Each structure stands twice: as structure tokens, then as C-alpha cells.
Image (cartoon, rainbow, N blue to C red):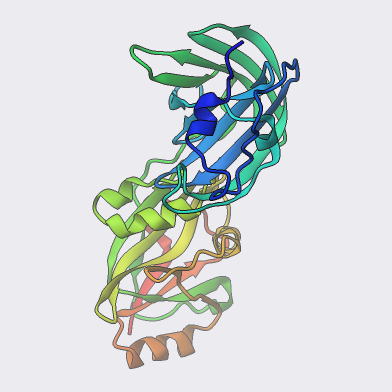
Length: 315
């Protein structure tokens, strides 16, 4: 009987990687375990592994499992992995095959509905990954993965950014608003899905921000401002988070959800916000040479285009 781990073993040196490298061929088995690992290698991807005949049959899925049956994701069929990989996590040294950080994203059991050389249909029963999926081979060596259940998340919002209406003075009911600096930058909505963002086409430095989200989907609202001679993404709203649209939620709730993400980097930051502090924030804006402040009603939903719920007050 051929050794199903021969290819796996040939790509790894047990003295240089913490990965399990069994010296013997695998024993036959009939288990039904699966694992999905988040793999920050040369490019972020997720590894789906299904127990089959004593090994873990594996696919690398660059964008993760599809959440919507309308969208198929690429799944690259890789070498079989040993059963010990069900619980493997750690740092594979750079320069080694698959070098990078690997964590267990989900694990559980699965049911096989069909298994052939060209099509694998399974029902996953995990904590984060569940439902019916089919992996199917396309022309050549490529595979795709398709969700057979209904969508498990709200559709991504596609809309124009919410814009403030200019007023000469702060609102009288200041306690109903949060006050933030007007940065004088260019507005930018940043959709993040599968560790990637289309905004990186214009701003390549945003790739690292998207990768930091892992499998978490989001739509961030902010602006690209020049601070200290460098472009910085200043974030102040969250329109979509982990499969759920937040457009109808009040601004105070969206803002709290944004802060809970703890998004921080050398090129991006969450803008400070001060509920009810109209005078001091406006004075600070003048002192820093900023164009003004924006007052945002704490109870306002997100409205595309100009809105009287957001007010620009010149400094």
C-alpha cells in the first residue's frame, strides 16, 4: 500500500520545523474529524483538513469558507497531512515550507455525503464552521468550494459615505452628540473580507490592516489624512461586522463596536471621540490647525450621502 504521507514528509525536515513528521506510514482509520487552520504564511489563507483513511486530506482556501452560496471560493488541493495536525498550532520557521504562524480556527466532525476524485460533499459540524459544502475539481488541478446552505451572513453594504451638513455653531443639545476632529482628508470606505480589501489597490499599505482581521469581515469608514508627512487611515465608524450589517444601529453602538476591534497600527488608528464636549474639541481643532469638528448624533443610523445627523462646524 502506498505511503500517503510520502509527499508531506519529503517537504519537511523534522529537525527544523515544529510540525509533526511521523516516520512511519499512517495506519488505516475511519474517523470523521476535521480542522480548519488560519495560516499566516506568504499570503493569508485557511487550511481545511478532513480525516480520511488515516490522514487529513487537505485544501488551502485563500478566502476561507464561503458564507454565501452565490460565491464560490478557490480551494487548492495540497498534500495529505498526518492526524497529529488536528491540534497543531505554532510558528513554522521562515524559509521552511509553509513558513508562518498557524492557529486552529475551528475543529469538529463531519459527515460524508459523497467522496470521489473530482467531488467531495460534506456536512461540517464545528463551532465556527457548520453546514453543507461541496469541493469540486475544475479543469486542470484547481478545486473550488461551494456552500450548499443558505447564506449565513448579511450581504455586504454597497453605499456612499455619510456626509455632514455644515453649520456655523455647535448644536445646543451638545449632550446628544459625539464631537470629533475634522481631519481634512479623503473619505474612504474599507471593506475587509477573507483578510483582503479592495482598498489596497489604491493604498497597498492597507493589506496588512486587512490581514489583521483574519476571517472576520467588516466595512470600516474613515478617511486618509496626511499626518506627520505620512498618509494615515483615520477610522471613525463601523458599518458591517463579522457577517452583520450595522447601518440601522445608533452611532454610539457602532462606535463602541469599532473600538472593541482594537484596530491600531503604524498607518491606521481609530479617531478619538468626545461625547458632549463641543467647546474643548473645537478649541483643540483650532490649536492643531484642523479645519473644524464634526458633531455626530449618538442615536443616528448610518445614512448614505448628506445628513443633518452629522454636522461640520468650522474651527
